Structures are given as C-alpha cells and as structure tokens.
Amino acid sequence: MSLALAMSACTNLVVQRAMQKAPVAEVQTSTSSESPRVVAFLGDSLTAGPGLSMKETFPAVIQQKIGGRQLPWIVQNSGVSGDTTTLALSRLNWALKSKPRVLVVALGSNDGLRGLAVDEMERNLRAIITRAQSLSIKVVLVGQQLPHNFPDDYRARFTAVFPRVAREHRVPLVPFMLEGVALDERFVLEDGIHPNADGARKIADNIWPVLSNVLRQSGKSNSVAQ
Image (cartoon, rainbow, N blue to C red; front, side):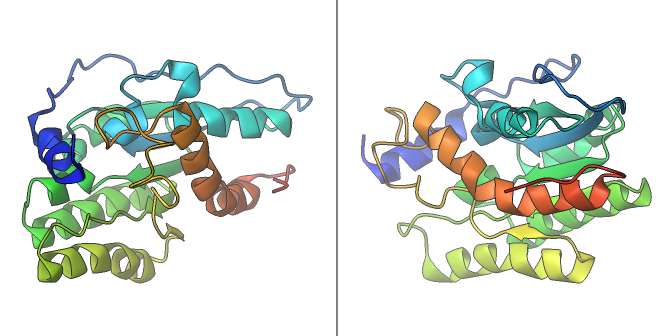
C-alpha cells in the first residue's frame, strides 16, 4: 500500500470507544516507599498500538524505562483508535479519573489526516491543556506532522499549531512524535502508518528526554536519569 493510500485508510478506522477503566501498564518494582504516581498518555491509535501487545506499545516502553530507574510512576495508556482532538476532549474527564500528575497529550494526527479545521484542533488542544493545568497536572505536548501529499499551506498551518500552543501554555514539547519512524518500513506495520514494536521503542525514545525532565520536576525526592 502506498503512503498516500495508507494515510487515507486511517480515516476509516473504527473508533473503539468502550468507556472502561483505562489500561494501566504493570508497575515496575521500586525501592522507593513512596506511593506510585500516574503519568497518563492521552492519544489515538499511535498510542493505543493496534497490532501490538500492551507490553509493546510505546507507553509500556516508557514504563520499562521508569521501572529500570526504580521510580514510583505508573503509566496509564489512554489511547483510543480513531480519536480526534474533539473526541479526546469529550472523554478527558474519564481519562483523568486516575488523577494523574502528568498528562502526555499525543493527539492531532487524525484531525490532520481527515483534513479537519486546524483552528478547531488548536482550540481543542488548548482546552485539554487548560483543563489539566487547572487541576495542577503537568502537561507534555507531542508534536505531529503530515505527509507531503497534503497541500503545503495546510501542512504548514497544522505543524505550526504544536510549538505555538506549547509556547503559549508554557508546556514542554516533543517536536515530532514519529521522528525516525514515519516513512521507514522497518518501523511500521503493513498499513504504512502505525508503528511496529521497533517503531514503538523509537517513539518512546523520542518522548523520554522531554518526559524524564517533567518527571524529575514532579518528583519530591526522586530524580530521573536519561
């Protein structure tokens, strides 16, 4: 399947919207006596990991990094396949029921692939971040980009949203979620879009340097080593 056709196929994903308890990765053994804290990943299929086991998704790889450092954090994978920023905003209260201290917002790819209004996507991202910050939750925003078969103007306006929102809301930004993964058949499934297990590990590596700093700042007595 060509990249253009694969990207178009993403618009036909079935939205898996069973409002059940968000899956939480297994807690790694910690030498700390402090109660575990939650870092939630609010995302779409790139986060949910279709075609992967729960242990292979990139949030689970982040949990492994946390566990390897004996830190008191639990990773919550709140990714739902097919989610746009509008759908994610509508389920935000559900995703926050676990009272996370950190929220990683990895959304926008479906808005772009479906050609939805960039202004609406930006409003939704701002609403998600504002709601989280009102609850004293620290936010990490994950940037998205579109393939070159989209109009240049639309691509430019889409890409510009993420650094602008991050700057104005004063939240750290991961520049591009799929850096080193997109367009590389070694790291994606046969659909040409979603990461395979190796791709999920690369996504985790893209996010970890930014997230680790936030976890360090959020910790009372623990630090995160990169």
